[in-house]
Length: 569
Image (cartoon, rainbow, N blue to C red; front, top):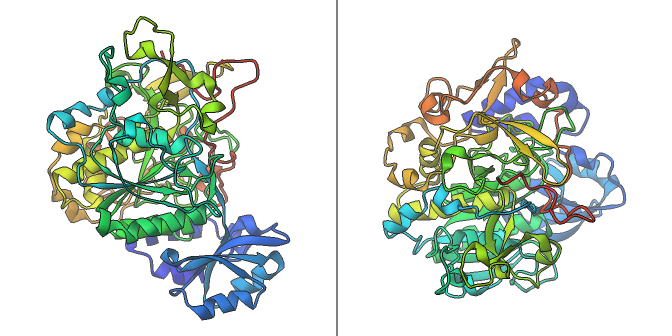
């Protein structure tokens, strides 16, 4: 029963889950407590993830088989498996006492999107990454698992250490990137800058932590799509390989909509297992910030598993082509909190995510479909032909390009102090983040001309803008007395006032330092719920409804500028 599951939650989870339960008893009673709402209209044969209330065993598979189910893949990490089951049998299967929760094996895709007119993004300068390099830090000896579309060993990755590779794409054993997204993400983490380091170069596009050991776990196919069961299996593999390759960081630049509380979601349960194993899990927030299907102005659009309070969820900012971080503004498409159902404050932190330059392979699908994202070599070298197209780099926009900057920073922090826990890394990044952000800004779509008014509030920018140098220099551990670094939840009083939930087991709440301006800055703007859309956002019935967290949007026919890029200058 759902209430029995709540009893097993830690205090921080319990207070939030009870709030959600009491706020929406009517909507919960309309469906089985153990069946996700997106199975209500299922018909025919359905591929589902069944979570059990005890570890996997043969008799559990037999139990599903008795309902006409066929096992596709075991997911021991979440005490579950993927099964093909007749939709008509789902209610009776859910009634089995050993079954904890049933949900579809939902699609996941990368959370990057194409950009618009480009200039040099200067993302490494903007987040103070050169300070780490000057200190001799490169992430050496630290394993970073990139769970994405694979890695293609371009020139800028030719000397990097890919310690291990595996494919979790059904029917595909190849681990080399066939799409292009995973390579772009990996370049942000660990590219060596080889192609922009020749005698003509005046700027080098290098990764933030070029010395890390890369663990390439491919879950997205040649079109950039995959399933959450593949992601869960990859996370399980990363945990199993943790001690062999010193995997301390997982990068997830992918996601899908939120359909239930994180306490039930199998993808969220998987990332929590990685956190329990001592791995920092970094997740892209999603690209739903322009969505207004629920009249929320893009609030409440964080995707899973970025809605889990244990992970570091990263939103995207626009550097506007400048090294000066004082002028950065939110990217209009970056998903905003609070999270659906649980109302956690997300994202936790933001980093550059608009028109980010990284690695390119003209033969891969993502690059072929986005030719206008190519950059010219004159952007980084003086070779007498500045208009010549680069064969090594191009731009992508989206929270998937912001997340690897945080993953790389976590690796640098681990290299400097291997004793740091995932909670300490998350807390230090958030406390040290740059908070003096432009309070209000306007973004303009370069194709449609549509404008978006943006606020640097806590649900848009979290605790602030990533500062690599400040995060590395943060040494205070006194805040760990408050407990785990769960992202705080918020509640709405009858007056409409939004405030943080107080929970003694976490580093947040009105009585703890996470409830002060030291964490969120003076511009956190908790204010009233009127700032963040209608009451629909605060009920359990609210559901992210703006389509999949698409990897990219195809350019409008007849145009040369892709659809989702904010104006860069």
